[in-house]
Image (cartoon, rainbow, N blue to C red; front, side):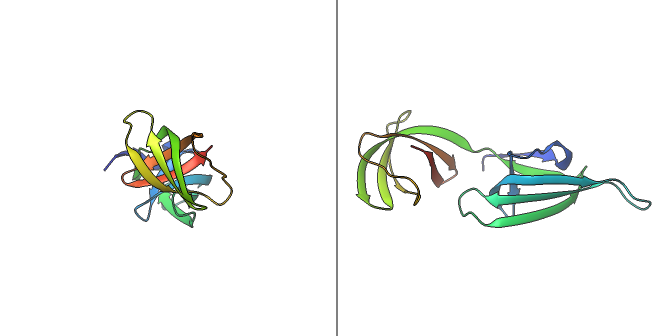
Length: 127
């Protein structure tokens, strides 16, 4: 799997983190100062990159956590099969991939797009 380990204290809003074995983008990050009997705690709220579900995480700031390595790639629409399915050619490898089209995106053949890829999951982010 394409991921690396880091400490919770090094996370920032807008970066990615693994929550419940799912890559998530961090929406908010806050810390509580250390108390009498423990270390400082971090509270992380994020949204799944590929499924859109909200998730929370509460960990000590010195705990190790997995960070996914999500690739941002360029592609070109080859064919629009239906309103929610399109065939996209990766502009680096020239592989053709069938992808789900988000509801707010309108695609037509020969459009250049940008998409995120993590393992076998893909999501169109810009057209």
